[in-house]
Image (cartoon, rainbow, N blue to C red):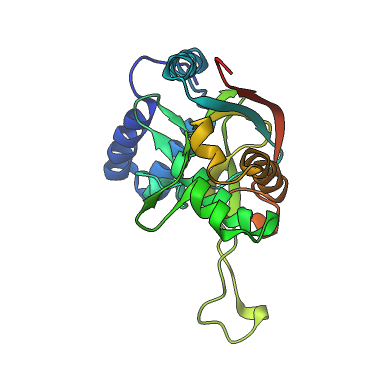
Length: 242
């Protein structure tokens, strides 16, 4: 698809509404999905934004962890304003015009997997926060920075409805969109080192161990079916002035 100026998501929604009136829902949805599958984010814009984030972190005096990782399988994550098109929730940044993984979701994943890494609920609560309490670690959104065809097709075969036996069923597969395998993402975790140490002397080690463990097991939905497997390409801890 030839890249044009303007917001790709808003454009495909507009095209969807036009096609919906003129050609019907199936054609409208198929055309929109095809446009999104052929879409390539503006990686230069995303990288420039992430460079600004990193410079801001350098000036802040906070310590931070830069994590670059790649998807080893398809990934389903987040909530989306285009659920009616994609069939499954898919987070989309309207400013950078790209699919992404929300920092709040990464934080939730870390909290869930922390229980697998350690049984110390106090450290988990201190690092990630709890009801009515902020955690010591700031989890940033993860954005794609490299890879062809960020989105890809996948298929769900729905459960049988109204059929007496399997010989009489004619299930209609549902096509949906997922983040493709082979896409490189970058994100950051930031913290005040003194405050982090209040959670325990091994807090940073446990945090990094949890992130590595969670990526090996998988992020997002349908993990038990092989989705969401990730591999860390780079993990760099920076504490300026220490």
